[in-house]
Length: 453
Image (cartoon, one colour):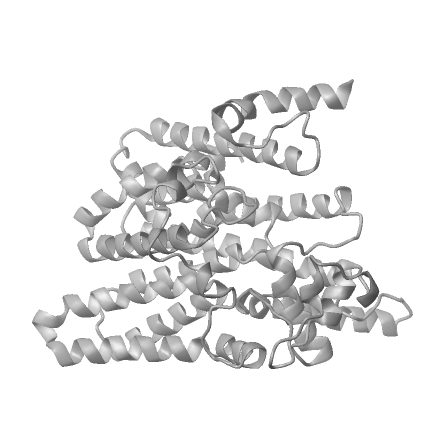
């Protein structure tokens, strides 16, 4: 075990699998020891994705009112102004649902296995409700999210290892996975859409890097389809189409305009084909296959908060998780090492930055850091690997840097969780210089004192 920690390049797969196992144990303990009073596991945005799966499987429709009433513990008589949307239907006779359908599709295998297992034990004499609402059903989404994050980390490691040595690649992966917001959505809130997004973008990047140099229509079809699948998880990830577009544009001098247009068209067509489940859901819910469910005002294209989304204490990307700032700097040497890959990564990240900054609530509501950037995970790993590659003759520096960033994020995570669980006299919210940068070092001592007194 000590060898794995000191030299993770000897067994990178074991390291990733061990972390996933520890996350699974931690998540399970959280479900048991920190259960919510109403018994719910899926909360926040995850609730809206979960009802899509539960309703499709058990009710065979996309009418979510009964799902929301049950999960929120409400009745039509207890609806108030804040929850009236649950019973208000639109012109298609459906209530709103503002979340993507992709996570529900990713959760479906584990959910269906849980359904089959409950059916079997019920027939054996047990009595667990076969209704899709129970904690076992809800937990299947969280466990799928943990697995998705772990696979994403492994694929991102393999992607980085295509350019850098194994030591550099695994340390960079660990730094970004455990030192950024990705860790929170890998173990604390794995039922949100961020772990599925992290996986989908990592699969795309792995396929892109491993097939680079091939200019066949089949490859562009695959990349387009993977971009469409990523967009199912989080709509903004359709930005990935910029990558095959850049590659096709770079091939014009050699292969001509017609070939480039054909390649781009193939990618777009396959992306749309992969995106059809979302278009079907939107058609049923809103009467249009393409829409912005939150309304046109949701995107402030002319007033993006470009600086705030990076540097604000209100969930700024760099202020909450400074390891990402170093990873972004690493994209410069990545361009020197692999120009087309570096340009593609920068383009994807730059457009993601603009899109995230243009959202009306650019801080992403309640979140651990800038959660909407978690989908950029493999790009950050590549950037961090490029930084660590410059230090490859100083392994202690790489390990020390990783340890510092992971420790900073872990301390902030403890502070955040203590606050979110109501102990606000012990842990202030991470905001302002003191709350964001100093309190994390004090909270563990306050918490220990509170537990032993």
